[in-house]
Length: 272
Ligand SMILES: [Zn+2]
Image (cartoon, rainbow, N blue to C red; front, top):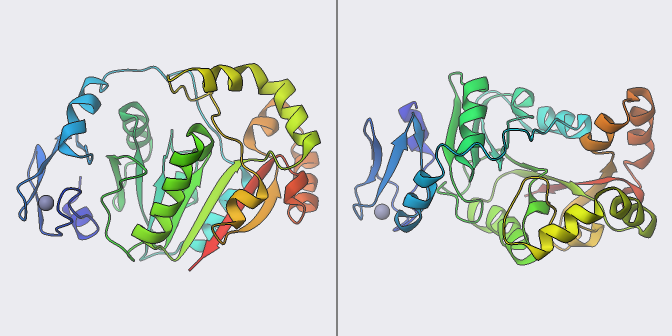
């Protein structure tokens, strides 16, 4: 991990910005809090949660699960990033969007497995990887050009996903935010989604175990508009993968961009 990352970090415990990086930890000069670095990956969660993360270090629960990129989202990332800026891939999963970012990028996830896999694939100068919680990200305010949060918020209950969006806007205050989530605004879309994924979603709601396939919450256009996002529509990568008709989906994306309530996925764009 390059020390350059320290320019962007702050301490979760005291908010201090004077941090030092050793081989096996990042330490706060203000309050003495320390954050371990394991296999080159900083674990930037509060001290009381670090043991829990270390215990999951070698879990490969999610090894069969992967995510792909949605073309509309990839295009937006290119539009809103540039060389010489820092962006954030929040809940990066396996890093499906990593290649779209121009400039520097921090990728984090709460799952050590995802961070390790993403780092293995995409480690380059200017690309940083750490474990963190999306509601408690140890980054300074006003340092990011873009936050991407794709295929992530639907895996959190409503209060938690709202808390994450609030944290992005108020605590990190980036220039832009892109959120991509499945759509549930339209009864027909909702019915089709329920037929395709209903059982998994019901089981997720009844269970406290987070598995990547589970959706705790499906968003509506209004859920993003209330945070001042502009909302657009497209088809998600899951449908593109299940029905491999790229030309059809590209046309679909053109039509449903301005009809988000009827689209498979919602894309929210926030500009400061
Ligand atoms: Zn501190």
